[in-house]
Length: 101
Image (tube, rainbow, N blue to C red):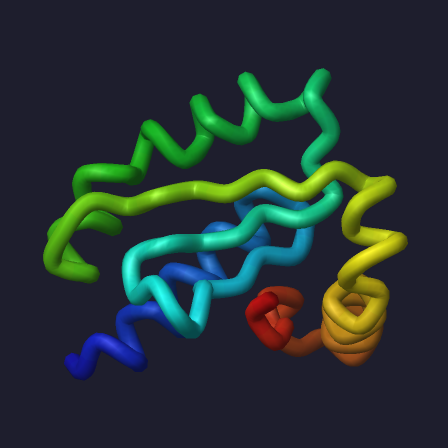
């Protein structure tokens, strides 16, 4: 399976597991952005990612970096991410559909 396909699969799993939009960074191939992640939720999100981090890192061939964006920041700076996520979720598709920052 190609790295692109692996990332698509990982995105799908993480979006469903975390219940929020996520996107891979186009400039950093092992960095993922988690949106709508307020400070109070980050421990829970981090724990969920940690449970599958080893497999993700094996699939992407290195260390996974995670960047969190609060709900306020997502609304202000990435409204298209939330819209794409909501539309995909409503259509029954992959809610991880999002353009990276």
